Picture (spheres, helix red, strand yellow):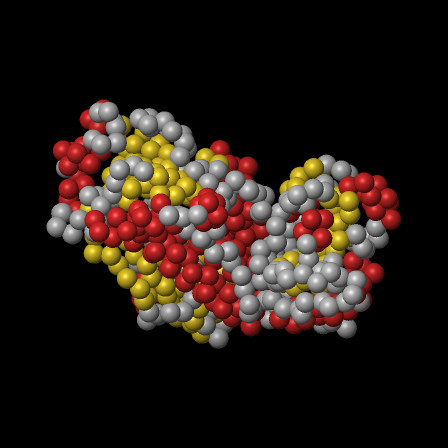
Length: 541
């Protein structure tokens, strides 16, 4: 049987579409199949974070996504008396984009779908349901509901929380499903008109009210166990829910109303053989944290570059084992945080709600600031996988400082300039993919010929970062193959980042994670170790 694709993706949701774009950029032959006739047209997720926007930047679609967002959307957590318990309003730009953004998911999904048209190697088929998968030595054969056989080297299940693939593979999905449902009501011509979101921890009935782009407002209400989910179609019931929120609920332009379940579950495995789980197929979490959609994009970003590297012959297949080891831990953290927030804001026990209010009122200014900065959200940080940990240098030239090691964390994205002095975000100035980035020095002076050959095969970029004042000189003297970037200086700059740490070079993965950090003279040895843990298949001699 001839191969239909290098990668078969089951599910044309945001995760499958993002994977299609990431793989399409690398020339990988991708087939996305979706059992529905079209994309789902109703909003589900309502928040997109800075990591996800950086991923959109990576696939060249961020300019099309931004018109469907509300940047820096503030959240107020309030109690039953509308007193503010906490405020979430992070306004920094560590990764180049606002940390919190309201968005309309169907419109962003459509951007991702249209983005696949840029690549001759990608295709999408709707009305195509996969009913069976069989793995053999050559890859995986998928059988559709019509009996058609589709062959691919790898298969990714991105078909949602009720993933038939996960069930067929007998992969556990441990966690909990809350007994009460939620009702979602989306309204056009927003009758409130304010830009923020409110999560109401009212013990009488918890709720959320969220402004969305293009004049849409989302309400979510708890539906108690004794209440029939069919009440979602009862106008009087819906109007009673909305009456405390708007002057006249009967004048609302209701777009849609739906009932959903609160789940907090993680699959026992994200990979068996050549079949992977990603997004809701691998994990689901309460909506309060706003991280379910974003966690799926993280899955795609982590898995996409690894699949492309293996399929294109740059790395051995064993690289794919690092997907689960890197993503599983952070997913569990995000599920736990989201579940904790959901329980705090939807607990209808008046005694527990009063204790929550008391604790909130007693928070110190520092604790309130931490909440405002969204410090409760764990950042991805890998200790294993495609990461090399180096010891803290103890040379006398370096002041003794207790600073966190950054290997395994996401590298920041300040504004910088390209070699011509044009200001832009760092990833645009350096280019995407693997990068060896060094402060002030020419990195090629520290990299051996054998490792240069490996970097070439990985299509890696070698980047020299200099203060903008040095840019003309560095540009004239940079050897061929070195990308020169100008640093703007000041708070949040690359110079400030390097100044705070005892390192002069970083090796960045295609997903912007720091694979390793080291002193300039250590670069070649550390680079060799990174190539080894990345299972680079290029001869290094």
